[in-house]
Length: 275
Image (cartoon, rainbow, N blue to C red; front, side):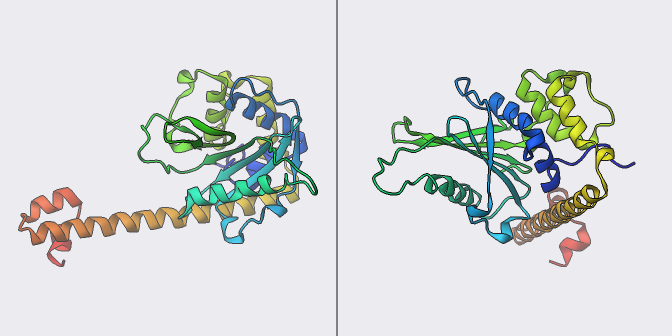
């Protein structure tokens, strides 16, 4: 059965929900409930992302929206579909562009507006964080763990770690993550999401509302996403197999019995015997 709503992890789906003028209030509501309580966004202006120097090979893995609020604070809101080799480096690299674009000609006192990099991740990257912690908040700190600079904030949302079911949702932001994680699988609107902002999100995301051009764009975006996930899943499985083989080889060298090696690695006795 075909999905009723778009996949928000696709470039098309993410832009449709958060990156268009008609859905701007969705992004404002999302950020307002993610950021500290004293931060209140009245309006956002979308900025041209072409100047961010995006690397072409990263475009399949990352889709980002650049915007600025009414106070001048800058936001990079990313949907990252795949873990890059130097993930943290790339996050730091892309925040240098909204920093540099604030430079003024002539005399300038170097005062900068706050920058927030909000990355919604379709993967887990921080294995050391407790499993239930799905939001990471990062700032520059000194050796005493005191914030050295509070105008540069990275917020990483690891979606695979968010496992709350409908009856476990406690906050408005919980509802946002539940909406994003399950949108493509919803057949009907859950009662807990029967709020104006989410109802608008469902209306925007309903595939039946797309015209022929939008449908073609979405299908292409969905294909790119599925192909990328297929490559990642294949690489992961190949990596697991290689790991099992290495463990089996080491156990065999140590003289462990075949049945024990098979039990611990999942390899058959025949496969182990060939190593």
